[in-house]
Length: 106
Length: 210
Image (cartoon, rainbow over all chains, first blue to last red; front, side):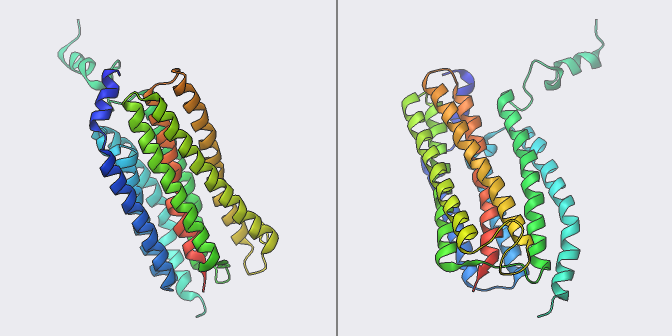
């Protein structure tokens, strides 16, 4: 094992932690399915599902993809630019989608 | 002779010969690819969500039983394959080649089961419910385009991931690839799982037929 590999191993989470994160992901998935039973309005449902999915994405990126254990400079390189680009896409989404939703015949 | 400012610059992490992010070039390359691919899927999913909110007759073709139960099973299978991939990366860092390959084969199996289930669902939609990419019997024809477009692109990623896993597992088993290669492969696989964590709620759970 090289020195670099040893460092990566030392910084990774334990098996127990990874299984716990996995259990959390499964639990959130079942909660999402439970929400689908509730027949919530489209706007509320979309907001809740996106929030829960973002939590799941955070768990996967932090533990499974090891981002939590990388240098913070890597997080700064990847995450803010990605969030900025996604926010730019959402500029078109929020005012228009919800305005048109309100205009739909009920 | 360099002046003091130049010497400070040459001594910094950005002067070359050092790794400012403390990771290898393969891993950095994979992360940059993941960011780019995230934006591709984001654009598609945001378009789909926009259509879901604004088009009144966009079909909701998935009843809880069997469609949502079926897609939940697919989600659990893919999540399970992510856990086996985590175990493969951990085994690779322990230099345990045999266990690494076993965990990677299990991950591939998860990917293949997921693809099989997904294709079964597609066949059911196309041949029994008559949904195509340009038309469907329940409303706006746009649904077929976004549904088959997004899930098809994701399924392509899963199939490429299985092939990628096979290549890395064989190479690592023979001692040609390092633990870093397994970890980079793991990054890709977790990304495929991560994308599904958005596709499943937005495409399926937002389209439940009550």
